[in-house]
Length: 256
Image 1 (cartoon, rainbow, N blue to C red):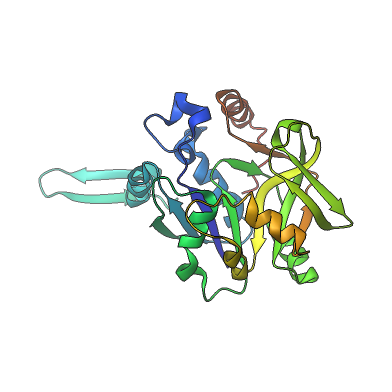
Image 2: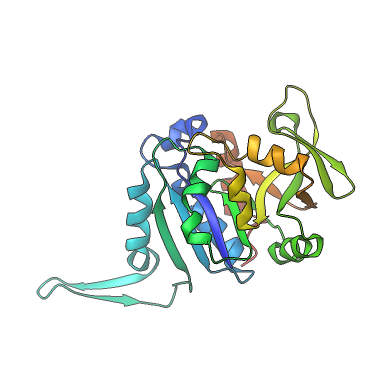
């Protein structure tokens, strides 16, 4: 099973960090938050990733092209140019780095990946700025049990994130960012059928708006409730909070 990770946005609310790098490359504990997200999946058996690039995508490409040297000790013989990599700190990941456009919206990025997902029965989908101790395999099992097109992991968070209205486990209403709301919200970890791509009109379509709202209206969106840890990294304050958890050895999302 493949996991799609959106990594192309401008990250304007974290401009202190994103002027020179894309948000998924902002570091927590010396590692890009993208690395943390991939480890969350990998710890649960998901090792193939499609990274949807956009803003400063070359930075992410350079990171993975140099992954071995960045994450291991190396010796370089300057007389011959021979390089030896020491240690065995490489994960068994297959990573596809796909340019999905500089200004493409979240839904548009997913639509541009249709050819990469055409042979998949189910795939995973998330953003490049959120960490959680979510049970990925439990969310997959839940998705398969209900037979609908889409499952979103829902979490509890303050009102500014929007609201999800439940009817049992079926999502009745999906409001991305209403003025006043509190309760269950979009935690950003989806399990999807490739058929959801038909709900996306084009590059200008945000995934969180019309496609997800239509899926909810059609009765095709179910919510997997996660009661554990979840945090996004939208602001410098949130980045600092995650950094403190990591440095204190108490990061709940470190399940590997």
